[in-house]
Amino acid sequence: MDRLTHSLDRRIVIQAEPETVFRFFTGSERWARWWGAGSTIDARPGGKMLIRHPNGVEVSGDILEIDAPRRIVFTYGYASGQPIPPGASRVTIWLEPHPRGTALSLTHEFAEESVRDQHIQGWRFQLSLFANAVADEVNARAAETVDGWFAAWSAGDESERRQALAAVAAHGIRFSDRFSAIAGIEEAVAHIGAAQRFMPKMRLERRGDVRHCQGVVLADWAAVGADGQSRGSGTNVFMLGPDGLIEAVTGFWK
Image (cartoon, rainbow, N blue to C red; front, side, top):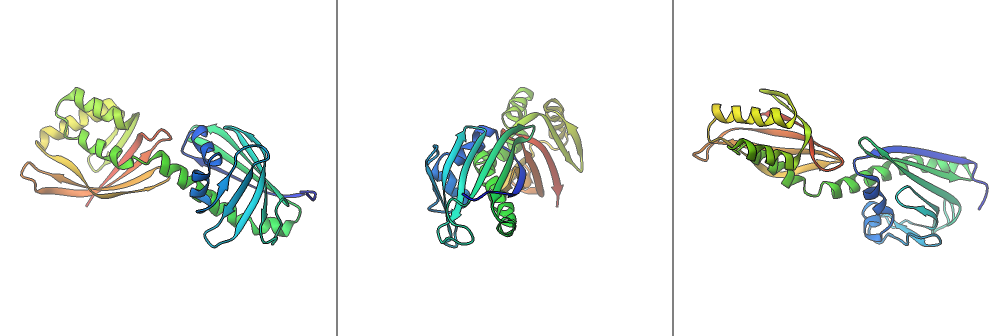
């Protein structure tokens, strides 16, 4: 390997615990989720990794170091030999705990500045795909979580309501809409109880599939009366934490 005197650095925060993030470096099924079908990795020193991009471009390398769940180091080069052959550059990825989940730092070292510059946007894009792949796994049950929030609004018993909210929401849950500016499960319990007194037998129902991106979930809803007729509708924006629990909800009425 030539002297690697040029490097690019990237740092992103992923809403998942380091152990969860690192799993995407240690098994081919998850590795392929963010690189492309047919990509593989043998996660041990001396093991091989293969990246098969959707456009057919292939990258290969050797695993140099692995220290779960903190660091992985591997060589990186193209099967075609252009712009660099296999073994001609080195990638190091570090993971550190972060209040929002995991801070991922990446350094890719090259022998030539021009080759380094060709990879800047590639890593910007690829790590964005990676963040989404991890978030999609962590929040695979986002629809159920959203449904649990809506169901809590129909729970007439206070203890039942509290239990329903605790199953899907963080203790400091924040909720805001045209009629709400509250924080904490206890306030939510009381606020929902008040809403039930003013709108008896009203329930909230999700309409359509949820839309999820990196811990942010959009869900359309309808407020349905006892006669089954809609009394209003809107969209909620849910902010999920690294543990998949709802940290904040903002409601928009149509």
